Image (tube, rainbow, N blue to C red):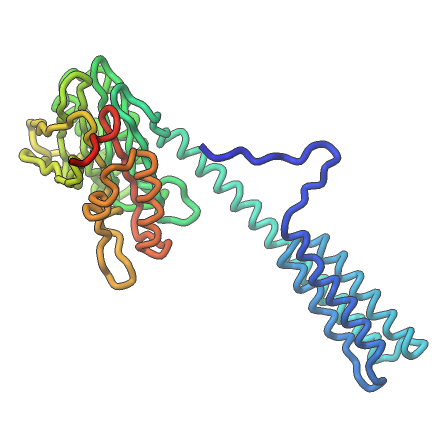
Amino acid sequence: MPTPQRRPGPGRPSWQPRHALLALPLGLIVAVSLVDFLAPAHVHLGPLLVAAPAVTAALGGPRLVLAVGALATLAQLMIGVTRRGWLSLNHEVQVLALVLVTVLIAVFAALRERQQQRMHQVRSVSEAAQRVVLRPLPPRLGPLRVASVYLAAEAEAHIGGDLFAAVRTDGCTRVLIGDVRGKGLGSVSDAALLLGAFREAAHQQTALPELTRYLERSVSRELAELAETDPRGDEDFITAAVLEIPDEEPVVRVVNCGHPPPLLVRDGRVTPCTARHPQTPLGLGGLAATGYRADTFPLAHGDLLLLYTDGVVEARDTAGTFYPLPERLTAWAREEPEPLVARLREDLLAHVRGSLGDDAAAVALRRGGPPPPAG
């Protein structure tokens, strides 16, 4: 959980580190003025004062720019009056140019400030959408310890086409992870559609194949309606893996609909849970299999299961090398879910130099406590 930041109390100034940088333009005004006073008569450094409001634009808003510009203008006037006793035509032009440049810089600073406010509003809406659509997973679900991470490909987005959810039912935990065709905000509606259907049906459908069949019908119906208004809607589909983890059985049941296989970490070894009965992605309608079958894999006490989207394993570095997820998991085999996904996030961003080509999501689940000591 992020550490809450202390807000300034009544009467306490909201001091920020950048305020200390105001010494740069103020020091520049003082330095130029002193040097101009001491320099020979034919040396004129006053035009350099225009740098003061220009530097201030990087530190504050338009009011601060105008304030520093006014000080620079006053210094320019003092230089002219002190050294000559009057303002020459050349000096008057310099003062006028300084005032004009200060006003222009202040206007650009105001436009930048307004743009930043708009971006802040967009970011706030995106964060609210993430909390509503992609609800955070609890750290504990029955006998499972859980952690998740989500990385959107679009820098200003907090949610995109990848999705995950978990629901507690009688005696088991049901988990969904999926990936909508495409990325970014345009795929949020499809992700919300599937998440809503899963959260509702997970409590009603007793068998995992029936739950998956319900999701297929729901997604196909909604995408068909969307295709009536958007011609690209008939090309949409969602890869997904639907899992069921009983509390009293050391197994996990999986119906995989075209999604990357979960990775099982046991005794320091990573094993993909490859589907023996693979299914087509959700939303393909008539192309989907008429009968779903669940595959069963072992999940004993201390085992860790990692669910992920293809944005993780298909992330490339500058040399075009894919992210080696199994190798990383082997090195992190003894990590608990929360520090594991934190390492995964940091390492993945380092691999791609901070620029993902696709949305990426991962969910780590460990049954019971940590694995027993090696040997």
